[in-house]
Figure 1 (tube, rainbow, N blue to C red):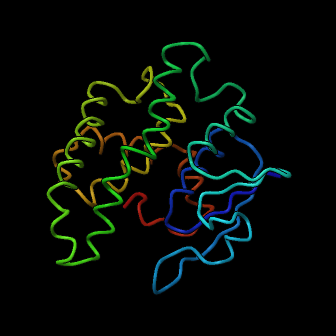
Figure 2: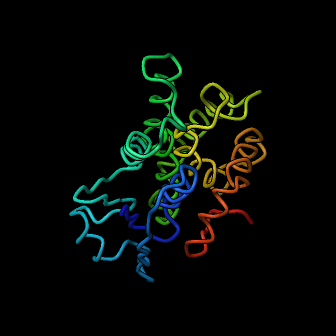
Length: 209
């Protein structure tokens, strides 16, 4: 059976959501964060040497990285759902957004989060980080103008990937500049499959309030 190794309050939440959307059998093994450092516990290193989440096991296969996991699940278990037809321009856009969600889009957010814990020692980095936040969040905001979903206006794995960015961006950036992104977040969180995923995990810090 497919197993999702889920770290609480982490990006693995969206992998559980995807499994609910494609209606496959899976189980969740939950890992608690260290109460002092908030890091993943050493037990995750027994699943994969990096000790990071999300990570899934499917039979003898172990897969890390959100984009690779989403791609694997949709190819192996999705029955054609939530990804455009191979060879189409929409498929190329889908791949772009899928990878962007864990590269360019999330990097300035993570830098903002990490440097916020450094007090004055991180002050010199803040102008550059703020510029990057404006650039990347502005790009996503503009891309969502007049549409509900990022690729062909149809829900895809790319939207599930970007959902985490939509959930944490308002915590680290001026929310009133992001009406399209906030509406996108709410559409994601209001899907029945998303709500079912929430019911199967610990409370999720970035979920609906």
